[in-house]
Image (cartoon, rainbow, N blue to C red):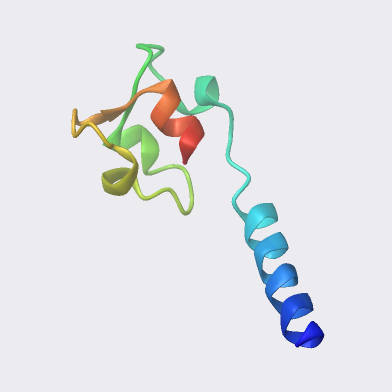
Length: 67
């Protein structure tokens, strides 16, 4: 059981490290205060559709940081 716990812990740690994302300002290339689908495409592993929780067609700072 302990071995399973260690393996799961390592898996989550690895995911957390792999998911480090660039700053909001770096992704918001046009500086309009929102991240478009096109801007989000530059962020590896970002599921734009899933993170656009209000379905506005862009990510707010809050939505991006929650990702």
